[in-house]
Length: 149
Ligand code: ATP
Ligand code: MG
Image 1 (tube, rainbow, N blue to C red):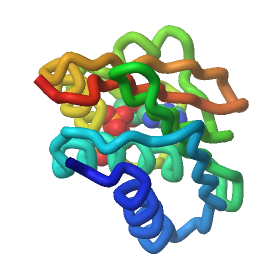
Image 2: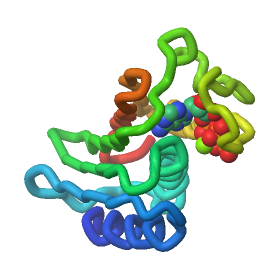
Image 3: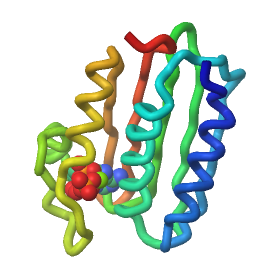
């Protein structure tokens, strides 16, 4: 089983080290975390993509928060930024390969990260949802079963 708290703390450190724009990263654990039977490489891939997007699409020094909770047989991750936001008309297409929103300006990217994340979340019986407001910020929520199928 994976020690979820230790795993998340190490992940945050790695993201922080790689973040040139020094966003304060707040890590939040809600309640007690269970030991989970989940593949650490898969989980890392999902979370690195979402956390890297959160830092990439938000101005320097604005906070990014990452929270994790275990509820019943599910793990819930929330990645929240105070960045550029995503126009409503792009929100449902973000998970399509190569789709990038109209407001990315000169921020580089290929539009593949979320397509792959969505596919691996689906394959493992989870869900991913987005809430976003332009120039206010974006929150992605990932819910995964504790025992991956
Ligand atoms: P890469 O393949 O390198 O990850 P990318 O970041 O452009 O490139 P995705 O991660 O798939 O691609 O994201 C798709 C699009 O969704 C982005 O181009 C951007 O328009 C939008 N997006 C994703 N995350 C955020 C976020 N946190 N804030 C604002 N826009 C976002
Ligand atoms: Mg990306």
